[in-house]
Image (tube, rainbow, N blue to C red; front, top):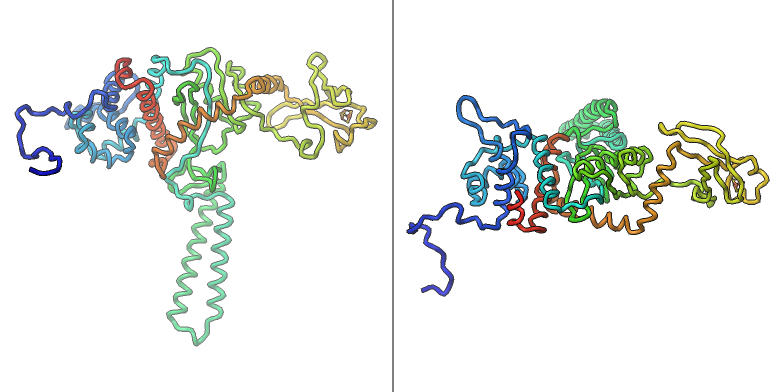
Length: 470
Ligand code: SF4
């Protein structure tokens, strides 16, 4: 007898044949996937995978959806890997009832059903709401940059193009001067080698010039060769060529209740759109939204206020006067009844002119007594101190009051939003998105968000309660 634990004899037939179901524990995540997909009202979601009328029938969208949800829950994202797993992974065999579509069928399903997959993701958020897991009113919005398949060398901005053209130009100059320096002592092979290098550089210059035209035609003066929608974005460190994934996260359990993929690296124009999506999901009359200073925008705050969304965002406006050591805006008190400002010297600044600044109507206020004021050296370097007021400045003042009344708002925001992004990036590994174009990347993002939410809910309530709720 062996001193070690021995396994079963793989050639031994068993008295009572084992079923596939025997290999899947009762609390396995795969059972959650099965129940969730089976209980989905799939007819209204718009899946394109219809059964074939003639020839071999196609796979049911539920089967394909199960494969993808299982894959993303287990960090298996590529269609080729999923094909392999479908014929060797016992859980996946159980889930698909031993159906194993080929990788192209799997890839086509994800490509053709982006909108339906996004709606499935939303259905799971609705299930979270049914389970009372979402706060009714407090959420945080944030964006993070995720890498596209586009390599940095295959993305050109104005600055990168200028640098690259200068480098190639310098190389051409160098090879031309090397050719000039050749004489009878130089071997034919050596001359040919220099000429070949020169030809290659001139070819590269032609390619860059054509790309430059394409780049300048693009609205944002940028071109990406592998994924045309990917953009160079500022990020901690070197920056990335990728997408800006916007999320709204529930403050209670850090579930992602809304998401969107943007090619715009800035968060400035995202606050209202994302907050409104969250408000609809929560079905609330009014919500509070926490966001960082990157989202501060008068127009966005006004749109939020009009839709009954209380945004809490730190002011990102910088003051030149403060930098110069002069009184800044806070030293001027607005007197709403008189529509005037009171300055540190107690003078009143009255409304005089108006101007349009980036599509915003600004009123200008000043006093006629600045010339005689003893505080002028601390107040203005000009003839008088002028103060601008946006026509909807009261919206910004209310936003500031909300922020002042919640001193811990930004630390709460950080704690809420960091969890999902940290987790998603850890699961995705060094390559984030695998598909090209914003449309397909959005589908990938929906699958990532769905699997994140599913795992999180399983952890919070357990698989059994989650299955019961379906
Ligand atoms: S310079 Fe003009 S605005 Fe400034 S404190 Fe004096 S009076 Fe007031």
